[in-house]
Length: 122
Length: 140
Image (cartoon, chains in turn orange, cyan):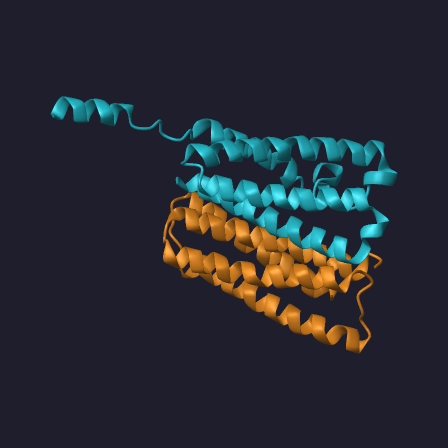
């Protein structure tokens, strides 16, 4: 993992998460803005998948457990599509909140992934 | 289910996913390092899965009871494992969902059971059919 890119992902995840939670609690149904935030986050996670495949070959191997890293990354990459699918099926204020909770969970997971890659010793 | 209940289910589902993934990796790769801690890690994953399902079906009395049991087990678990990870670090200071009172998960595991208990206490399933029996008796 690359530190500046990790930070970008965490910032986007937290921002999208807080935005969706606030919009949802204010009674807004899923919109282009809230869904767009999660779409951007998913794009970053897909880029992260590519980076994680290439990095060990380019001299940036993980120090920690590769299996654990990939379990986190795959889980994280599944959350925004699942949250958006829920939101589009059931367009209520609570599905906006749930998108926010999903984005915040992704933020935590990306941070854990960075710790596994750079700090944890396998 | 009301909206806040759905949010609760999602958070439990995410904890179930996180705990299952983590304990799976720990047991596959380094069970011998801390068999007790990682076995409890797997137990916590099972508890979260049961709690998630029970909350989804908590409109029925049976699942409502299961939800109470699972969430109380979860609360006891995070408090006991959290304490043991500080007091007996050789046995328990290995990273599991409940170590350090869930510090590795921003203390969500510590706060979540209280939220779950609040929700269960304020959302008892409807008591069944005595009023229906009376109204059908009156109508006939």
